[in-house]
Amino acid sequence: MAQTAKHVIFLTIDGFRPDFYLDSEWQTPNLHALMKDGAYAKGVNSVFPSMTYPSHTTIVTGVQPAKHGIFYNNIFTPDGARQEPYWQDSSIHVPTIWKAAKDKGMTVASLYWPVSANAPVDYNIPDIGALGDGVREQYSLPHGFYAEVKKEVFGGVDKIDHGKNQNIAKIAAYIIKKSKPELMTIHVFSVDGASHAVGRKGTQVQEAVSDADAAVGIIIDALKAAGIWESTVLLVGGDHGFYDVRKSISPNVWLKEAGLINDLKTGDWKAQFNTVGGSAYLYLKDPSDKATANKVKALLEAKPDSVKQYYRIISKNQLNTGGYNPNVAFALTAEHDASFGNASTGSAIKTGKGGAHGHFPDTKNIQTGLIVHGPGIRKGAVIEEMDLRDMTPIMVKLLGIPFTKVDGKIPAGLLK
Ligand SMILES: [Zn+2]
Image 1 (cartoon, rainbow, N blue to C red):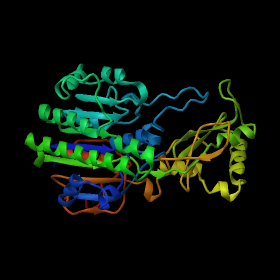
Image 2: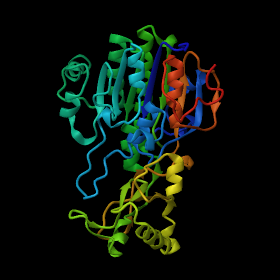
Image 3: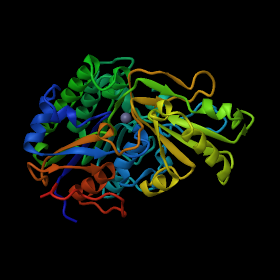
Image 4: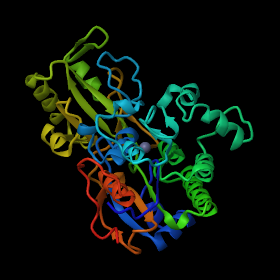
């Protein structure tokens, strides 16, 4: 396979939306410069749930969650115990682009990428959910790299402020200068935090988007300084969009009222929803218990329109066709600015605020974006719509590395 780019860098801006570069209200000069000289998509479909970890895993594997095995950010616990994140590379059931590049002898780096601890890369600072900086430091590569970064990049700080996108870009710049990696995946996330806090718009989101754009600028400058800008394809993408939240729905309250949840701890339940932002997944104690699944469905359909407006049922068939979590009876996606809560007591419908994602990936708001720039990319190409799973075949093609068959495909007209 011919290699068209000597280096490929995939930067995800968590919660990245196409309007950040399609609408002029956002301050994104670096993104606009990349677009002008490269290609972009008007919308990129996420996966279900449109959550950070399943989405990022699809970007590096080219397949849907049913195949890669990362169904949420955190692993579902039927007994209601605290959910731990999926964070080890070994949780991913299929080959990753990191491994494929490494097998070809390439230098590979990854920064704050979900589900990447112990990934076969040369440089790594993994995203490890809420496990804390100690774990992050322990799993950084090469051994002692986290301490090296604190000293060499940030002048000996005790703690890296990774909530600032530009700081993560500075670490990327340090690696670029030091080793010119052939493949690097980078995840910055303050736009997501801001959007959860205030919704799709607001000063906080504007500041975070500007910070992400500045992070892109830092990476471009580092590539130029290292003399590899002309031989690098830079992809700036994301994992999901966002919805504003005005209502919070806790469907487990209804299941408890119906006698389907008594005590999760002792296993005295028949059905429960695992709720993740804009989606909720119905687990059955006995997966073959069709009667209970039908009972829950009937209960949801019997609610008045004033309640039903907040959710839409995603059938088992839709889940199977889309390549989503095979372990649930059906799922819900939130509508009319609702999101879901996990409580089984109190009021089922409450006022909500801020923003959420996780919704079924078939609406504009939940789409993410993509801008691509560099050798092999057709300047001026505009992709109307594509999928997150298409990212892997694009990177594979650019780097000219062998890879197993994937679900995604290279969008027509994107490459020269
Ligand atoms: Zn995210």
